[in-house]
Length: 322
Figure 1 (spheres, rainbow, N blue to C red):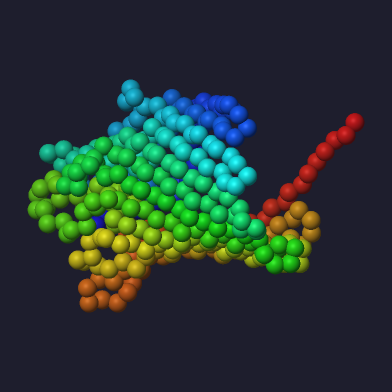
Figure 2 (tube, one colour):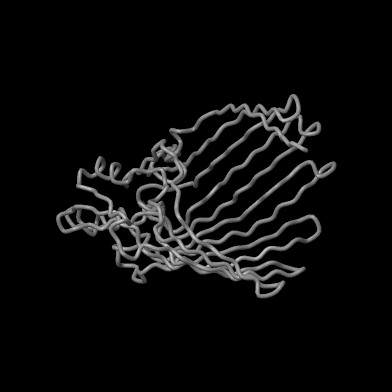
């Protein structure tokens, strides 16, 4: 497996966009958006550099600037009622991850392929509980599981609940069950010869996109406790995901865990002192070996960047009345 390592350069890229909303009545609204020229991928990985170091093959990017059909557009129909809010949506999009296109000379070009995304979501409240469910089917141009030149379509979904509890609802809990499914995902071992470019197509196609299993299930959570009128606010958020249907001929994977514990002190109004940590781990077990940390896949690629943090902030409101 090729290790794709994240960089430490995180930045925002501006993008020009147009959007509009139409309200035909009090129940229905229609949103539309258009992006004439999307930005490059924001994922903090230099894939070309990582792949070149691992494979020594020449690796280049195919920039969206060189394409004529580069726009992104989509729409959403929203329906609101006293019982439930729901929407359906469509997005003519680009994959946020690159697809490696391998020439017969083994030169690799990284391209962002087109995707058709179909979404649906619904949310409601029952007593103090907020409930929601959402799903997105990303339709690619590949429907053949034996074709490694483009990733297969993928279904992502989430079901969640949140609520406040305690004295004066001072505490908050959010829990979500998440999942993704790649139908017909090929989890068999890579038996192609090293001299066959299909070996590298299969090895890189999904790993470059962070997909290494047919099914990925997980939980995310966020909890917060306001103590002494927000003088002290401990919180913890995190996620755990576990893979199914993957090539376990070399190693077994025991999932990925991401944690962000923190505690916020407010010694006086508007002044905050926050300390915490951001931690990411993945566990694997190779044949005949003990369970160890994996820094080549899942959340494990971020393990070397685990760190503690301390922030100091002051917020104030200012108003001028004549």
